[in-house]
Length: 111
Image (cartoon, rainbow, N blue to C red; front, side):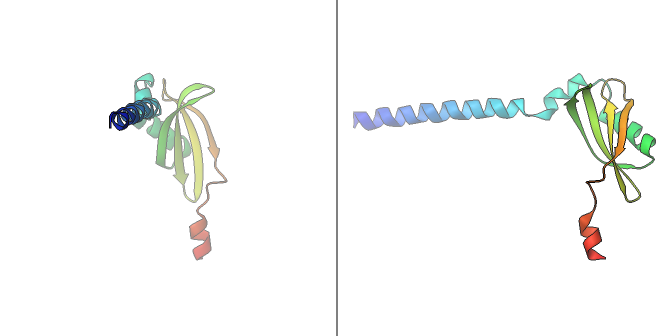
């Protein structure tokens, strides 16, 4: 009986350690922790991207890039999709490129 109690206790410790490590890794992957690194707000970044491309933003996220922290904003203009990178410190557009791989294939198939 004592042996089974020790094995149960050992299993509990192993599981608890694993869950703690998993929770620590999950908190490292949480994008919200990087928001304080951006001086410009998401609203400012989206406005800059929409003005640059003359379209409507449909997605935006903060990410680490070669240039530092940037907002990656996806903007739709008519039937075109643009990927716009906005400096997270100044809310200025770094680049805007048409995304030719992000096409609405469902729409094409229905026609």
